[in-house]
Length: 292
Image (cartoon, rainbow, N blue to C red):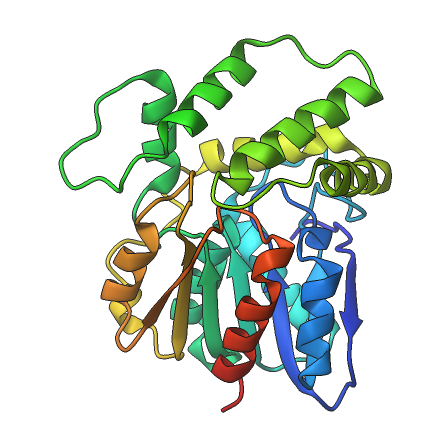
């Protein structure tokens, strides 16, 4: 096991019901908005968020010298739980964090009190391959997950062909453009708030370029996701998708179909981010889901 430090923080009373927030690929834990976290703690929850390895204030690795796979990123979930003294917790997960949460729920069901996945894809669905084929203009095999929205494909094709940003300002402008895309078109986009967030992300990162290691980890073991196991999930499951999801449209319904008893919730106007307009609705749903 690699000796990489994982940054985390917790909110609320130690005696409160624990929720572990798991963010998506290449994403810092602070993308779980402070206001949203505050709503959960006000509802009597002990909330923990963390930076994945190679993001934010967590340790960074020289991938060539110390390669890893998404199995290792998944195992960091257990490390964070252990570090906070949690035998089990409610897992609330976003995007690729939802793959991690689903995997943990299958692999170690005794550690998952409930599962909430937001803007995610079904474990074993090969979502990364679907996106890559879409970006490369390749046909999708029959039975593949739905492709991302055309504007998503166009944005990342342009990004892949563009030169790297020249300085801090250009890098942050690019991060804001990406946030605007992922925000979707269903709600107004607050560019000033986006700039404050992306400046915070930029400034707290030990090495902003290290997030690319998450892509290398995916390529190192493309078959990371076990296939055909979602029917084994025992944890009560809530699956949430925005009505304007640009990255993984329709994937949540497939998760809900495959997990016994799972409930599907569509949030009007939301895209692939967690905008302020959705905080109250999201927090209320998660508080209700974790109340058992």
